[in-house]
Amino acid sequence: MAGSGNDVWAVGYYYTGPTSGNIWKTLTLHWDGSAWSIVPSPNLGANSNFLFGVSGSGNDVWAVGYYYTFNGSATMTLHWDGGAWSVVPSPNASGAFGLNAVSGSGNDVWAVGTYSDGSAARTFTLHWDGSTWSQVPSPNVGTESNQLYAVTGSGNDVWTVGYYTFFGQTLTLHWNGSSWSVVASPNPGTVDNQLFGVSGSGNDVWAVGFYSGFDDAYHTMTLHWNGSAWSWVPSPDGDAGQNQLGAVSGSGNDGQGSEAGLPRLTLAPELAPSTVTSPLTVPL
Image (cartoon, rainbow, N blue to C red; front, side):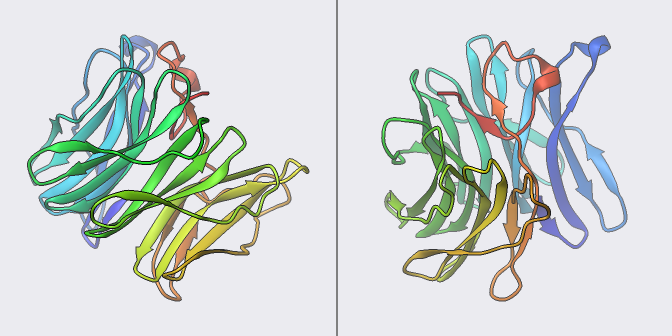
């Protein structure tokens, strides 16, 4: 979700059903201060299209996701100019691609996600300079899966988060204005640790997700960046079973998280539409 007051956007996708092709199509909603309305949005190709992230306001709003091709999937970036959504070309290479989040405005916009190099998922970051999207090299940890789900910041202070390895370890990358680097982050869980949301800047950044142990329970996870290091800040669970945080917003003593319990999509061209959930995950 992006915006405030009488200019708020939410994006996602909807299922057309058996009478309309059994595919998924992009869905964009706008809040005008009194009601939500559906705003027509484009789709690419003849197969399913999905939107997972949105950022911006006024006549400069971006929505990102991916669409299925006959060979896998490809990135999709849509722009709102104040009157209509349009498709803006975005980089792809061989393999399966997808974008999970976007942040920024004007000539400094970042979109992040993942792609498959044929053996494992790899981090994927795109930058908009005001005229063109370009891929920016981003690091990976080890040879197993690395995936990015959220991004925040601008200029020389941008964060993107996710996880790496099959049994997840938290992954936090920082952009200093010239390159991305891996920044060490805590892993409170003995089995799995995954981040899905990030917000903030400077010495006050929050990242959220979940962790699990050998008891198979999922616990909410909140990490805080104080300008020099990430630390784990204990957070409550809703119950003793499955708990996940999928987004975070705010700063100072007014940070707010939201439990999204994010299921993940296995990126496969043959995936049946009825099994699609979000966001994008590339299998090992």
